[in-house]
Image 1 (spheres, rainbow, N blue to C red):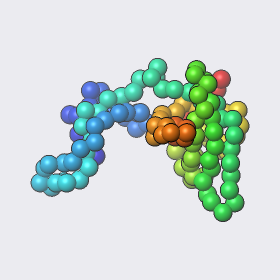
Image 2: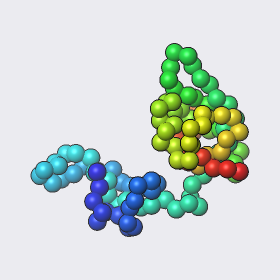
Image 3: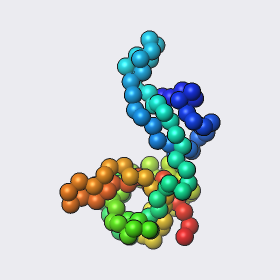
Length: 126
């Protein structure tokens, strides 16, 4: 939940944003989550990656895999459900496949020997 007053731009569906998570202090929505200081992430701030390996498990509806950042060559990890691929922009009816490129954001930073966990945002042509 957020107020337009908390934004430094006019938001529209599909915008990629960053915000500070908080708790709503107001009576009707007391203790519910709220986003404050909402800022749009500009195109140049988005990173791109290329999928290099996909792991599909029969007993799970998750698709897991590895991708390489197109600028740094850093190896990244992603995990997404079959149904959630619908929400990846410009995905169309295609399935995830090796050699596809995507804009991404880091979902969870790397810890120890693990790789950064990323969220695929939009399919791009390279």
